[in-house]
Length: 210
Image 1 (tube, one colour):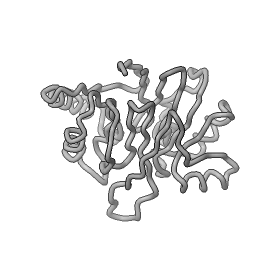
Image 2 (tube, rainbow, N blue to C red):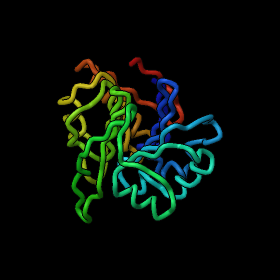
Image 3 (cartoon, rainbow, N blue to C red):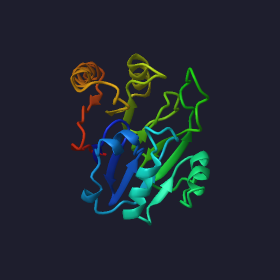
Image 4 (cartoon, one colour):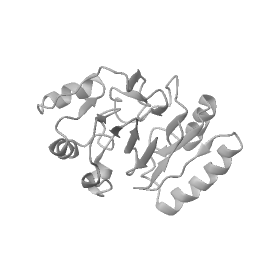
């Protein structure tokens, strides 16, 4: 499986001749962290929830302008949101994409939105803004820091789920030097638990055996 990160929670996945883009949000869009011209095809566009750091409508429209036939899979609330923009989406899983209803973590100032965890190829899990999912593939995208949670909570969840590989996500709030320092600490910590932590940089493509 080829995985590249394009800021925060936006990941591009290539596996079994399929290309999937997950949670392209406003940070990725504003910082031009994903070059659409470098993508030859896109089979799936996936969203965990509707917060702008995971779904930015102008970005969605830009993606659809290049890939009008892409399959969009997400939760029912986003299906309804996109329908108002005449964009077709589905909340129905298939052989590649499995959905797990899992709550967005609690927020201090607003009601959390509808949320799903994405399981791909029975191997890769992207939990969006949730640490209450019930299962994971061997590869886990782990949200590291947020107004709704802490790195300590994220690490505890990962240890309880025991993936083989961790890809860090949801870390845009950290300055680069802080983020890289945390990556080093997390790499050493998870190594003691036989889990490979991959501190992937923006645009870097890594290959993980599945």
